[in-house]
Length: 92
Image 1 (cartoon, helix red, strand yellow):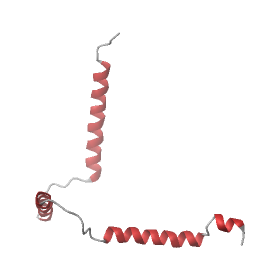
Image 2 (cartoon, one colour):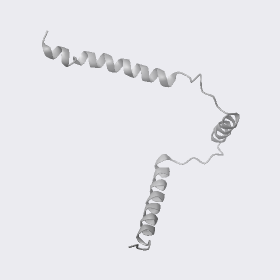
Image 3 (cartoon, rainbow, N blue to C red):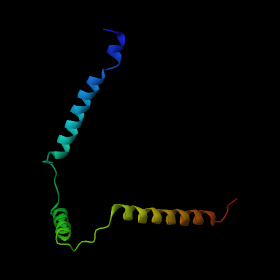
Image 4 (tube, rainbow, N blue to C red):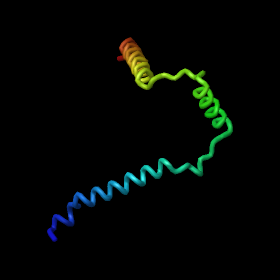
């Protein structure tokens, strides 16, 4: 056995380790949260939103459209803030 064998794991050990990590991640997502406590108000809101999606009364907006609108709003706020700072009275 070479010294490098102890320092640098073999590609096979990476693969098996990656596989175990991936499996654990998938399991953690698929397992239901048993300890999640939710107020009745939140549960009612979730139910209301799901129902509106299922019956077609919800207005769904594509992710790209939402992000574009948010970026534009942020840019406007940044410009407004910069203008406010630039128009502040100078103090000596």
